[in-house]
Image (cartoon, rainbow, N blue to C red; front, side, top):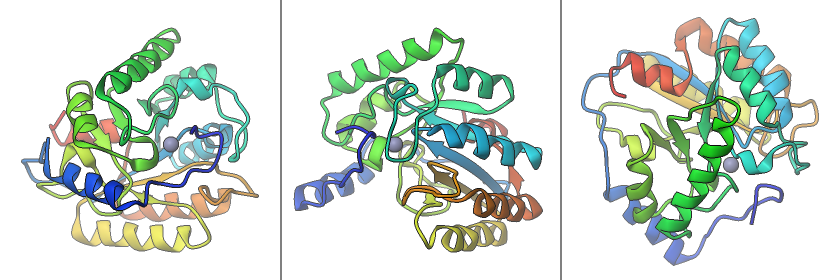
Length: 252
Ligand SMILES: [Zn+2]
């Protein structure tokens, strides 16, 4: 299974129990206070429209985002439009965006063995290093995770982002950070509600989306919706990439 086709997460009882068990082990809780409100916009897989329209909208507001990328998808066609390639990532990086790791092949880390995860991440790191990029943070493809995946990735990255919705507060596990999707017909409304909550509670919210196009996929959003959300976040919070926020909090 790759990101080239839509994915159905493992809805079996075994899959659910694995994810629940993973929440309890190999934790790295945030110790200090979160001096928010802080909001990060991230893009998973990086369809080209995220690297073009998504980046342009952030930059128009003077902001930057985090791109969790798989070098193995380099320029390929997909159900969310063509993927960006390593030249795009290098260019984004020069412009101040953060490039982060999402495995090389969009590997399901919930099901893969620890050596397979290590090998796949090595491949991504190597491919990105050829264009001068170093990745310090990671997002689980499909948000799927296992205790073994947390153990092996904990050794390699400053933070590991998952896909369950929530705010980042003191005590939140850096090895399974929550994130809220800007995706589907309700994506903008739901994300706006979470932005307001993060601002009210003065904590950190990580948002993610995929393609940013007029005809967005079920995993993306339109440029207008994305622009309204960046405007809303910027009006009440400090907006910065994931790694920048963690640095600012003195965490990693
Ligand atoms: Zn992904």
